[in-house]
Amino acid sequence: PASRGLNATAVDHAVDILTSLRERRDSKRQRYSAVARQEDDDDDEAPAPIMDLFIQTRGPTVVHELTNFSPAEFNMLWLDIQPYVNVNWNVGSGRKCQVTGRDMLFMALTSLKHCGSWDVVAAVFKEKPPTLSTRVTGFLTILLPHLKTKYIESVANKYSMDYLTKTGRRFKHFPMARYAVDVTFQQTNAPAVSFGEKKVFFSKKHGQYGVKVEVSVLPNGLALNVTSAVPGSVSDITICDSNSDFHLEHLQKAGNDGEAVDAGPLSGEYPDSWALLADKGYQGLHRRLRAITPMKRPAGGLLSLEDMTNNDKIASDRVVVENFFGRLKTLWAVASETYTWKRENYDLFFQACVAFTNVHIKFLPLRDEDGHNLNRYVNRMLSSGEKKRAAVPVV
Image 1 (cartoon, rainbow, N blue to C red):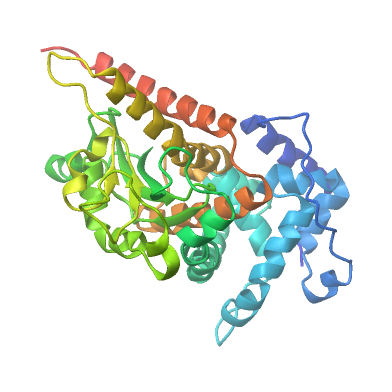
Image 2 (cartoon, rainbow, N blue to C red):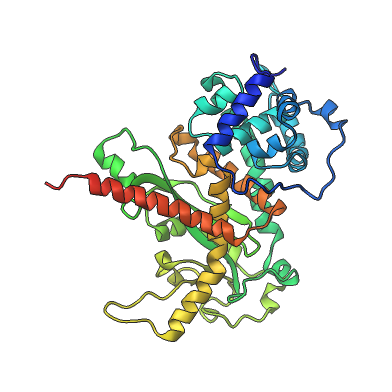
């Protein structure tokens, strides 16, 4: 059954609120999947009275406005996860959720896209904020292991170097690199703990309290790994070191990989390993992994023309991870706005967003505009941090 009090007027008002809160990246462009829409019979197996009411009131485009996916894309995603949901969610003894699984996916995606506060989206669905929070959190808690397996870990298994070679999707300048790695920072509220405990969450670079997460991205734009969040003061290279088991495993040459010509940087030091691309924050990583990083300008000196050219090539290839972050933070407010929800649920929501971003990229590959969106996000955050520092009185 649809939520109590939800009607056409309420839907109209709710959608207008969400639309006004978030400027659409391209309001004139309507995206449609090339995949045929599912037949109506599917509704008998997986009813979605809440989503259906939104569609009846505002038309099919409301699905994309609220979830980032067109109706056809949403249906494909639902059909992908439906068998898992049917077996694992809302089963067993105890009180059952009155919302259908398909509607829960609709509500969860809407929450991830628009939520800064549960109050906003709860009002949209005529639910009490604690009720919506509990339902969405519970649904995603059950779903996340499947999302990670199907949309992140499977990427690592499918897109081997041999596969990337045969499909022509290796990096242009550094074809010996399997993926690019980087860390993203997200602002959070200052923790309500002692100053000593609180300061580990403070990032001097950003001038904000927050957390960091490392993501590894293939040259085709898909993420194959996402770490758990760590406090904002932790260095990028320390995060990478703590994730070394993943890197050692997935950079290892296997099968026919060893037959490929590899005369790239550090091939002598790491003959059995592919490389990863990283930025200047990973200086020294090459001592432990086959990491290709830009040269830093020597103190009081200048880089050679050759070094500058090489740095440009690294930046050109590793832009894919910046474009991924740009797409991630454009799609999901919960991964880009100041995180105010329960800290213990951060990994749940962020990793779900990474998985859903991979799904989105399969429908719409990354492009340069995604990187521009990341720059806007970072510049806004840095500017905010600078203003906070400037506001602190000098004693």
